Image (cartoon, rainbow, N blue to C red; front, top):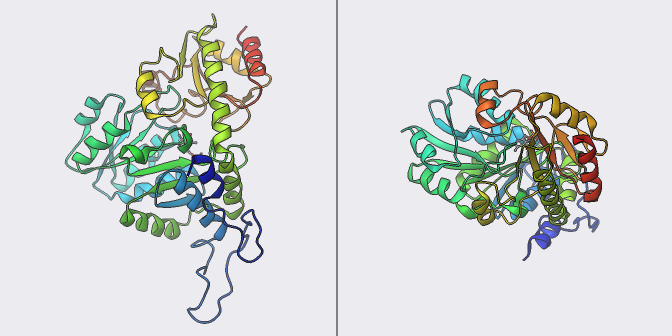
Amino acid sequence: MGFSTVAIHAGNEPDPSTGAVSVPIYQTSTYAQDGLGRHKGYEYARTQNPTRSALEKNIAALEGAKFGFAFASGMAAIDTTLKLVKSGDHVILGDNTYGGTFRLFNRILVDYGIEFDLADTSDISNLEKAFKPNTKMVFVETPTNPVMTVTDLKAVSDISHAHGAKVICDNTFMSPYFQRPIEFGVDIVVHSTTKYLNGHSDSVGGFVALNDEKDAEWIGFVQNGIGAILSPMDSFLVLRGTKTLAVRMEAHDKNGRVVANFLAEHPRVEKVYYPGLVSHPQHELAKRQQSGFGGMVSFETGSLDNARKVLEGVKLCTLGESLGGVESLISHPASMTHASVPAETRDKLGITDGLVRISVGIEDVEDILADLDQALS
Ligand SMILES: *Cc1c(COP(=O)(O)O)cnc(C)c1O
């Protein structure tokens, strides 16, 4: 079955008690039991909720995974996944992950005995050098946020498996519509559903998708044991969001390409980061690994002052954190999403004070271009 058919039907069975076509929001904390030890498979809503189960089936199917788990946020999903490693284990983390992921390792997990090293995984020889005898996991994001560096998922999976390490891929930027990491050998896919999967900037959530039964059992156990579950209302919203994922991603991609090309030719813009541009150093890899380039575009304005003029000059684009919603959002990575990344690391990555990131929405593209043009001028 095609992607859109799966998106609309997987997990979306008509409600057994009423026939409701849309999965109801089961806003309940508990379930009446027929007798001692006799129930309908639902005991307590942290452990099981039908709205959440429907969403878990849905996104797992979209990622080509057997198992899926929905969480209260992308960070809760990532933290739960990190419960697969134990004190004394070593993790290789891409050097340009989402700022919150870096902070989780750098400020929280280190105190629990999880060792980690950063590596620029876009160059496999860097990754090779980072392995240690106790490396149990490699965590990558591709394309990265905000400088859009692409990592070869097949190469990372092959080399990591040869070292006995699992590969986790944060697939938030591409969504399963444009990139399905499991097809390249990745073991576990994580998401912030807050972004494209929900797509309407009205819910915070996270997801873990995987095929390994033993790991899935542990993730499910930790999901219930720690309890950072996605609420019924949010599960409903994301389930509604994924039904239009294909059409939204097509629209984001179409607008993203136009905006990237426009910026690349704009005299006030020094550099554009977008894997869809032939000038992007990994354009060929992106074409091979992704079926589209999406709506995330970053560009260099040259200085904090120039960046401020753009960010405060836009009228249609909204200045704000987050991404992946239908509306265009514009942000300043150095002071917003990546403020928790040390300044020297930011410099090394190209996250300069003049860098501006746009999550290109699905408005009429002429209006987005006109807004950027007037702000740049
Ligand atoms: C937003 C984001 C996260 C964190 O997700 P939350 O839902 O905000 O907790 C993780 N990874 C990426 C790539 C993100 O964009």
